[in-house]
Length: 475
Image (cartoon, rainbow, N blue to C red; front, side):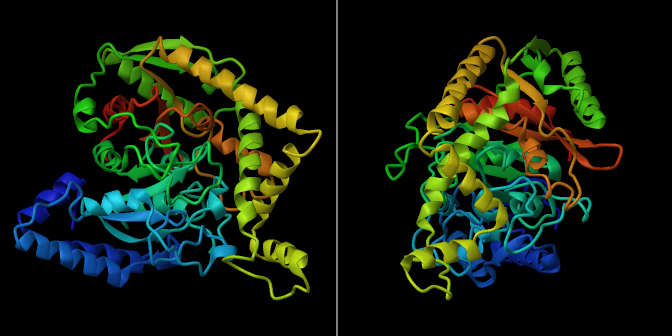
């Protein structure tokens, strides 16, 4: 079954050339064949087939198909689906069953999407390689010895391997965009607040955002349109109107487009193949009528430092709830309440999660709050002002998604600071809360995927995806 896009699939289903059940069986068989790749933590074999049969009956009975009728989707395992495991790829939640649905899930199901299962990830979304999962590594679809990126590596690998048409991920500092770049697919992080976070397990609440991974920009736009909008259960969700993103995409033209190219995004340390491919694509766009505008974003080198101070501080607070007392893993080696807390967290949290909790507790402690946390918040405000100023002069800011192609499994696990640099180009958009997307450019000299990163102003997702669509190579 060859499917180039959801539009292609939808036409086949609605015209009765294929049933939803046949589509789901096709994807489930592929998932089962890839079981050794560790991409899914939980597969909804029976639930997905029951859902497909129900949709087939709806169509047979003359019911109007929803916007996502029969779309087979994967969902990162830190987003809640009622009655299903919600592990966050952590031992501490290994057997936890969600008691409610995320708002994004409810909205997608209301438009007749079908969930195939929950995908692997870095534990509590903390990582850039999918090597921090309690359920093991996920390999890169193009080289099994390399990582798929993280923390939404399972979702990215599912889409790239044809194990889902579209997948949901979460993006805190690049966790949708960086794995999209590593897996040769589209990865969208919308404006902060564009999608409700209700039902998304919190890592860093002022950064976390549900994002979309897909083979093309049209599918990403459609899924975003369904999920976006105000939610009374999330006070940080925006009441900004939700446009028809496909119409906004169609209105974008390369001719006359002003593309900001920051010199800070092309340091001497940038991988030569990545630099060559990104600059080559920019040159192509210039030949098509776009204007390349050299811009500068001073103090960009402080982005990673500010980001990790802020997110670890928020993580230390958010993860305090996992203590063995109310739900999740509880240590059997405890003599009193205090030792139960300590032993449960020691035994069930992974190394990277412990590292970030400790860092966050430190920067929030007496005597260090002003030195680290307060200063990082001030840096965040400076970044917001500078990106706003830059986007008053250009339509979009462009650069690499990652400073290097997918790296080998185990290559960076011994050096956390080197691992953190994998997000150096994606973190700024998360700090300022602007929408950003990674679009695939092709493959380097080692046949590894390379992505291009684009940032637009607040709530300009339609414009952003329209630009990305015109940049994306034909898959």
